[in-house]
Image 1 (cartoon, helix red, strand yellow):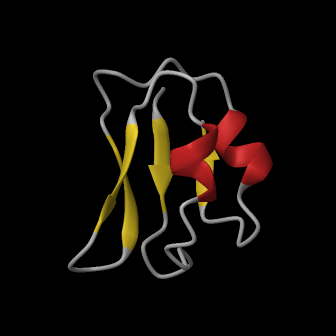
Image 2 (cartoon, helix red, strand yellow):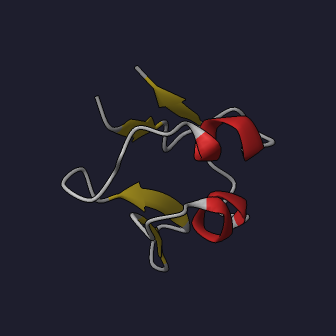
Length: 59
């Protein structure tokens, strides 16, 4: 399952964007939250491990 972002918890810090090895995460500049491209996500969990606000979960 691809990573899921809890928009209410996401602070828009970009840490997950920088950590993603396949560039499957971008930042929605308007809402200032991370967005995961589910087709590109490889479920590696790197984003979940680096997220300081615990807003991303890989299920």
